Image (cartoon, one colour):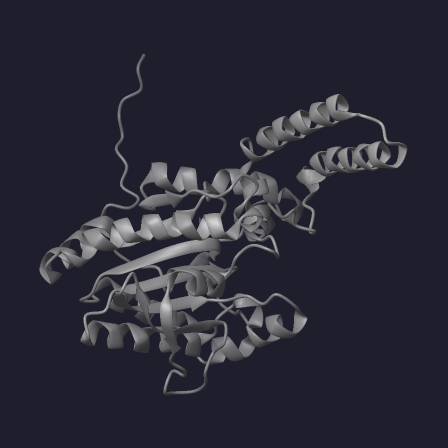
Length: 325
């Protein structure tokens, strides 16, 4: 398992132990001394520390893992799980938004339409991808591809990974909120199966614009929220430093979302996050996606639409009960 070079704050105790192990191993080689007992002891301590850290992550720490720069992005999963991907460009109105792309592909031999948000790995690619923040033409391109999928009865599989839609002046001038709203309406009525997968960040309407689907799947360390923790903290406490408290209050992590009924399944990740073993993360996604897709493609269109309506109509329901005296 390759150790990512980028280090999160809460991972520092683990890295210190790994440095001790490397130094002790080097000392053993240089002095030709048998230090197997000491090496085993540190290895055991590293394993225990790793489990203690990653099995007890706070919501804010999971947000940090979701934003890890080495985390697999949509293109990584598409290359690992799909064949014959053919990208389709442009919204036929204004431009080709590179932050949101899509096209036809095959999953397990079945033709599908893939739509995905993509961040960049370096400064140049981030500029090209606009840091994964789609503009209105991106959402209109997504809708064009969804309608094409509906025409040929192709299941729609969307990959969500954005901090939010681009909030710049030019984006607002081209009516980004209207573009997202139209997508919400049209996805609710789309006459073909649809599944969305939150692979990293799922921020606000920027995520929801391609996620009103029959099933919503979220990776174990991804998050899906109405607002970023920093944005919430700035509004409620007038200070972004309260982001950890906001992350706790927002219930934005996969386990909490599943308990609340907002999502349909949690995709497990390797210990430490998907970036520690992208192949294992892709295999887990393949298993989960295959299961949900098999369920949906068997449904008649009328039942598919009814179930989708019921799913979103029931979100946010609550019942009041009298408190026990």
